[in-house]
Image (cartoon, rainbow, N blue to C red; front, side):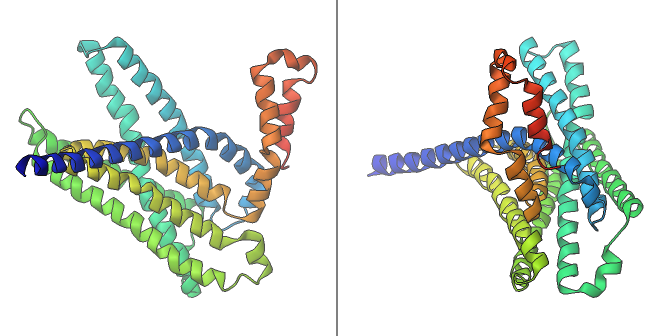
Length: 331
């Protein structure tokens, strides 16, 4: 009986480990594919809509998102290159150890700050939209211009940088050959706070969807479909948090440490946050969806890929023509 009981426990534990790892693997593949293919589409569509977006109330935020995402992808590219070089050069020595320190503070640290600031910005935007939908009289208080928006964003970055520096100093002061439990506990509270505000932002969107659906008969609602934008963002925020659940499964089943949990969740946040911002913009209204259909139809994408893979076909039709057609269909 004891042997069968132990075998049963071992089987359940294995099932939990393999399920968590397989789910994280599938989710990471999905996010990596989206992370790669969505950015050029986002850039082209953002440029096509620039004049129209400048007339909207949320242009200061969308403009900031556009610029910050460009910087984020540059940093991500550098991060990937340095990671590959570190893996090629093997175990750390005096040189690679210095490179690792520079890499963490100059590349990884800014990326983490970017993600965490955007978690708070997404939450603040959810609160702003909630107030505008249910309390229109608050509009003068929650609608800001470009300068005020920039000041708020810079202040948030400064506060998050101070927070992380404080945690690093606290860890260094308590360091005794391994990470101390004191800064780890503080970071756990900080991490829980970030997840609470993201989940709260998703919850705030639910009554907004129900409220906006009641105006579906209006022409502006049929054109811009704000309820779809809010619904997409709610679903994606909820889906992106599933990685944390599976990572928690590894802590429970595979005895992963809290540090490993932070690393896994941080990695998925680095992928999901920029994707969330871009997906929300691309599907924010019917016009964007129609532009995507015109600009990136399957036939045109296959045609463009054909010229890239088979350069000799340029004699029949130059690749520049195909790419120009692909890049200007929505103008």
